[in-house]
Image (cartoon, rainbow, N blue to C red; front, side, top):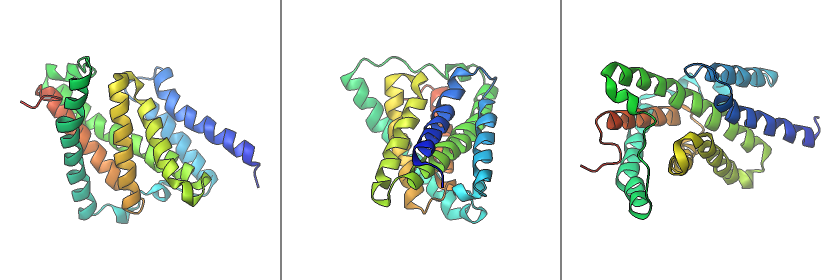
Length: 217
């Protein structure tokens, strides 16, 4: 049996790599995701597991899962548009969110980024955070402390989005909690947070493209 201290240091190192590598290694157009997914694949293989063991079972991709993903995404868009963004704008001076303003230049850029949102926001981020990191924390923590795996993973998910300023990070923490709860509620079916996250990102990008993001009118 591996020493618990060594396991702890290894886990911290893996999580730190998955969070920091995409930001500090200048690989072109989201290709960091390939490196990180290969690392996760390698780590799973060492334990005689595959991505299906993270919740990507073929049987999990059902009409029910698709509907839950879409409906939950609509709920989360509603929360962001009607509650979160108006609230922070009321209490704080919030800088304009400009990270994706370039998609307004043409429909083709919007389509390209929506595809990237499905691959990165949907698949990559959910596999990495809910599928791998949260499941790793579940395994390391006692069953009575599994709530902490949800909380810790969500905070890490927020920190991962530090390029989006403090309000974007807080939104990401809330989003992380939302998708982590979905993951747990539906028996660790990773397809549901993937579909929810990707659909949410798609709607948000369309709102940005049409200048409706964060605006009620």
